[in-house]
Amino acid sequence: MTRVRLFAGAADILGATELELQAATAGELRAALTAGHGVSAEQVITRCSLLVDGVRAAGDDHPVAEDSLVDVLPPFAGG
Image (cartoon, rainbow, N blue to C red; front, side, top):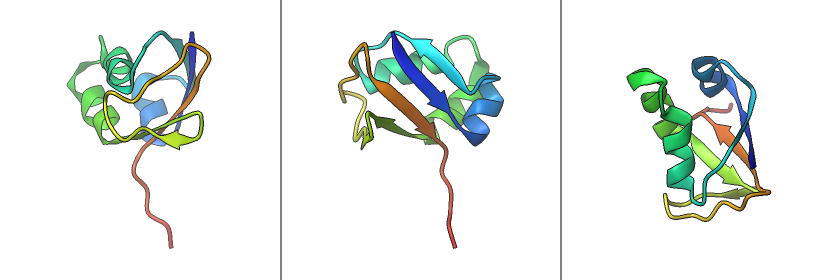
């Protein structure tokens, strides 16, 4: 299972800071995160960046290994 860490709004909407999910790609992972959580979860998760083992997933076809660590990061601004 892939270890998924959720931050800020993503953690709030899903009610957890960490999950274990099974997915082969970033797109499958997003689908697993939003399944059963309604439109609001989909709106939040689709805006988030996914870091797979420290590398930004550039598209839904980005591979996710079974032992990967994925960080779900909502948009943020610094300054």
